[in-house]
Length: 86
Image (cartoon, rainbow, N blue to C red; front, top):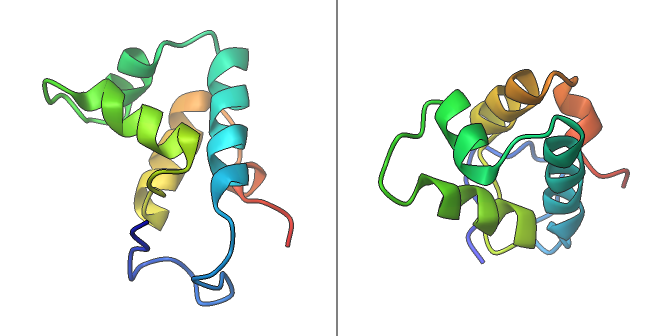
């Protein structure tokens, strides 16, 4: 699993990041958006953009802090709601 350098230091690298993905998935479902639509709204227009969202939702990858803020804005939630409670 990759851990970007931009993640806040209060989040240990050994932490289980799946809760972030679960919270993204729930917020995306509440906003009634597909993975592809969420990717488009955050500016990811690549051929496999929906796969990035899938990777975040399943915990394979975690979004950078800046990306997490874009995701939250696209979903209409405060980005802190996408962070797991430690």
